[in-house]
Length: 282
Ligand code: C2E
Ligand code: CA
Ligand code: CA
Ligand code: CA
Image (tube, rainbow, N blue to C red; front, side, top):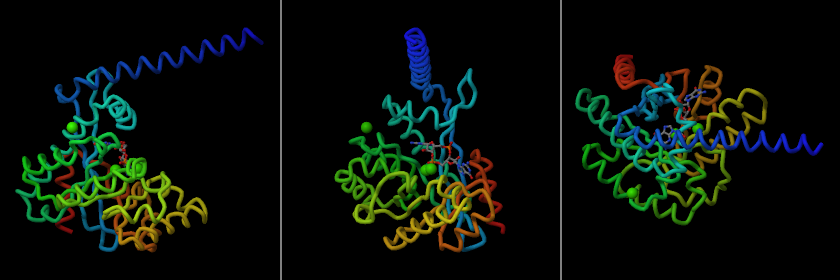
């Protein structure tokens, strides 16, 4: 028994070491990835539910093309970037490029002037002391009007430090952009804590959208989230909408916006532009 325990321990430490060294390699590779130009952005459409899926805007999502390992998903490298602090530089690059993209679309199409570009902010970025200045600088450099930008901040990033979050959100808000609480439902915010934040929209995490059809509780949860949001004057975006049934249920609950494979996957810049042109002609 003792030997078995020792072997188990050995296997355990072995697995831990392997994991640690994999993360270390990933972090080393991440360090040079910006300057080597290995990141690129894809854009996923966000549509209105009340109006024949009229295009509302896009969410910018990062992709990493690793020279040896191919595409690495953000679910894998964003936590490493977050842990190491590299996310601050990466995030700034994402913000700048997303703003530039919408700026160039606006120059080519008057319709693009109605669209909103949503950009994710990680917890570390959100707590970075120079965030507000950095966002201001990017807006000035790219020329994008702040009204065309929306920042998505996760519920946990806001709630982990609610007191300073209020101040930070107010300062961002005063620059003129819209603010969204992301992955809502995965944290523990109460109605009273939510109402102190100057938010515009609430995004329901896809895990809730997926559970909507699996039973009455799933639907009740989404219903409760939407009515909570509406009672706080927040508009709602449902993420991960893949099927027409989900769309119809959400529409029935007066959810304003949807995003998901039913409409489009996250698209490379040129395809996102074409998606915009097509929805303009509908
Ligand atoms: P998120 O912010 O919740 O983004 C939504 C995720 O859902 C995206 O995954 C998107 O591709 C995926 N998705 C959209 N529609 C559907 C659908 O119908 N079905 C399914 N199964 N999935 C759908 P992605 O692009 O892999 O990103 C994962 C997470 O990585 C994001 O979750 C976000 O937390 C983080 N992330 C991505 N890009 C950035 C970035 O530029 N900055 C930061 N800080 N985080 C990012
Ligand atoms: Ca998001
Ligand atoms: Ca900084
Ligand atoms: Ca999510």
